[in-house]
Amino acid sequence: MAITKDMTVDEVVQRFPETVQVFSRHGVACVGCSAAQEDSIAQSAAVHGLDPQQLVAELNAVIGARA
Image (tube, rainbow, N blue to C red):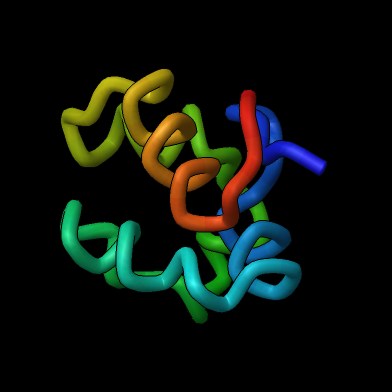
């Protein structure tokens, strides 16, 4: 299963804990807060000034999946 930009941050972290390092590296430190439960990766990337496609690619690389 590949990670998509429509998945929530919380969903990704729950399924793939190893992704925390990617989120942290990009300053998305709120992996356990209520925003992580509601915000998609695309929304979170926008808030942090990140390219959502690049973020998804890095997340998928960490879990060994292809987007």
